[in-house]
Length: 432
Image 1 (cartoon, rainbow, N blue to C red):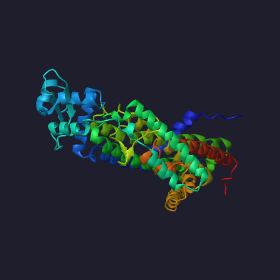
Image 2: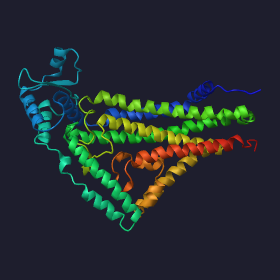
Image 3: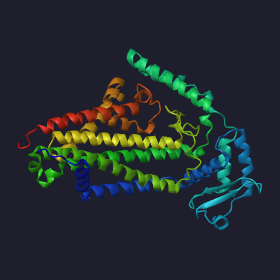
Image 4: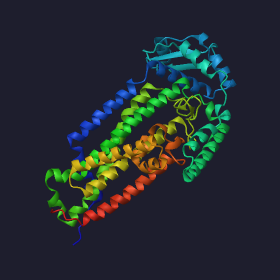
């Protein structure tokens, strides 16, 4: 008689086992608290004020700098002054208590309502003058940007290696085409958050960098606990003595992947919700991420391989982070089927991470790009490049779309490795 498992019911049962472990919730709560503090406290009040004022202006004027923007900003003008928080609240009834209302110089003109933090030392007039100073006479900076210097610098570092030189030439041909395309679209003219664009996007990069390390660690923990639950309870040999029992491993792996995804979303929420409570994104997230006010380390334009708004950029960054988190879960599941010790599985993952970091770092230090590219062809290598995802990445990447391609390939080869480990596990003698 053939016994048929009900995958959804058994996967739900395994999820319940994970959810009942106090260690899991302790780690999630700790990480969430750290993320909440980073999202809500780490940014200076004056930076938030500049961001929110620029966002309010962009929402009211269209957000494209140039002569028309200069005229619109002049009409708004600081001469109208700023209403106090109390008067703003009484006039609209919906304005939050930390908001200042900045009317223009004409009674019938545009009214700017900006969420200015109470602890900001900048007045509305100062914010207006600062925004006027950085945007007056702004031009399409990408139209005059020449990527030749960057291209030549990269080619000089791989000189003598025909294959690496060919790859770099192809990549920077695509990069030059992207620059020309973005210049034609006027992406650099988007106001975004003005002078606050760079620091706030760097802040987001730092926050999500911590997030990814947290979620990858959680994925290892959750998958190791899912597969090692029966060992900890002392029921593994009893359960695995039959084929039906061994088939329960698949629901365990599925539960580990689902739990990793849920934990990821919970920690993302711990960043995004307070971020949206602090920052007024209505005039910023629709702006191009290649705005002239966003740069790569303040040295060159932030040119991406796709046309992305800031909101889209933040979304695809989080999506790539989820894919990397699942890669760690798959790797842990593979080791969990091959090894019977939960702590040994976690230790092996840690050793693998340290080895990759060491190999990539040593390769860069000794000028061996191929070693860095091959050694970094995995989720850890992609995490090391997190500050510049979706850009040209310099010598860290031999092709366009490197971080995306490596992550996709990692999902494929780790899934294949897990399938092979599963086949070996089904015929393994667990009595030893």
